[in-house]
Length: 318
Image (cartoon, rainbow, N blue to C red; front, side, top):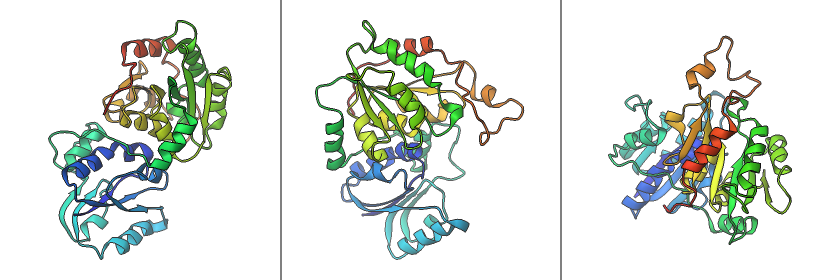
């Protein structure tokens, strides 16, 4: 059974689509999957079972990347096409079954539920990441067995949704001090390339024997494999937050000027600012592209500590 699966260029959305992939793998054990995604998300699928080919779709001017993809897949008679990008490609190739994320999807629902709706599934499949043996072995070298590790990513790809690093520093100190919720744990600090400055502020606030430097270390797939070895994860709304939840790690996502109703970590915990998304972004002159400050300042450290106390603190199973 030949399956063409077109997913997002963004890490978070790509992770949220993995529930459909897991559904296909378990429902159709003879399936062979050709997966299309963006460069950033590609390493997240290195260990995907039933993967025949991974096509990395690099954006080109005048949408030429879609033409290149069409030329690559037009010669195959597909048994199933799942297109979460709503592209013309999926309509212009042969397919026995065609599932396209289009206008009939209720876009007010969580993205995981939207994806399930795309395939007409009544039971919503949980996102799930598969790692390659190389990724798992490397992650085991970076986070040794037998350790309790708190994973924290204090950065994101947009300043507006980034909780101030000073708050992360205070939060980490209180969580790991004597009598804290994670007393005696080590702390792994994550961040993507280009986000090192704030992440290093947090890293160097932690004593040397307790900290694990995972700032800009390898691919997103390797970072996710390392997060999967943590016992708890805290971070802003980001792709790595979704990686944590999809790895069944107890997760607390921090939200402000993004939609927690659609992008909260699936079946995990989140806390948001007292203000709603609309309140945070509704001021005169707001422009996400030119914003130069965090909109997360009203989320207090004490509130995050309380959310951790009331949430799960034991690593969950799939």
